Amino acid sequence: MDKRISKAASEFRKPLTCAQTVYAAFAEMDAQKSEWLKANSGGRAPEGICGALFAAKQLCPNDYSVEEEFSKRVGDTRCKEIKAKFKTPCEDCVRIAAEIVASRLK
Image (cartoon, rainbow, N blue to C red):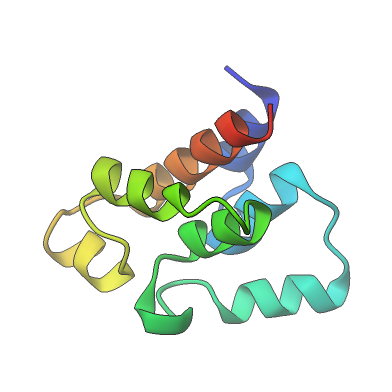
């Protein structure tokens, strides 16, 4: 397994949020970026998208297939739907988002 994916999976909630965890596995994160990502975690990103997906989109800004692949693998892009309808744990969303980013940033 890619070390970045392992890092994202192991650091989630210890103490980072979903968006912070995915982002930090692939890029440097200063205090301002960290707070911005935290504010866009847990379904608080625009349109209620998953925080892990939000971070993945920041890391792959011109790759519009990131959102499509995430939705296919998780069931939706919106945090509320992912949790309520598809019962996908946040840990899985973090791992899947990290896998998608890793595949794009080879």
